[in-house]
Length: 268
Image (cartoon, rainbow, N blue to C red; front, side, top):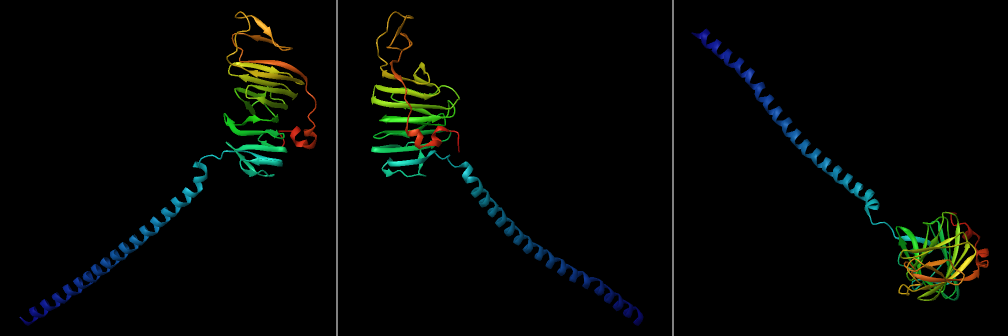
């Protein structure tokens, strides 16, 4: 009987020895799980911060790409008694689309716009704009001389007329506004193209024309018949949007001797 009781006690001790480590293991496992949970939470916070920092960096990197493109069209390369808007023009001033350039009675200003240059003489004014993403300007008073490296480099507007290079060769042209309906266009180098709506004509090198803009001009004769302005090519009655008259051979423009770079509009 005594032996049986001893054996029973021994069995209980053995069971306790077997079960105690199990409790300890449970506690260790629970502790590890808790540590993992805390570590996991810390990792998520760290990961979230990293993702947020990455998004901010990405937005800063891509903002200049997604932002609206600049409307800068050119840079002033020479200025004397000239203005950009109400401010005094100076070398290095940036010209934007919509800017109005003007010169005083004895002033002048020259702007480089891509592969073109525009020079305003004294008592002149012009407003810069864009034609199909290319630089352009509207001459409202005085005289302007422009040089281009190709036919798409620049366009000069006067009223309803648009003057540009006729070829992709270096071209120099001069335009003088006499009044809102009348102007003089000369070609110093290369040929020019003047267009008023669908009426397009060429001005050869070394020739100048006085242009009279009159879209409501009466027919110049029977439909299909041609007539001539003084010294000019035939004018088609059904299409004529303006009348022109030869004013003589263009003389050299001495101002270009002062600005050698103007002769090479494709120079940087």
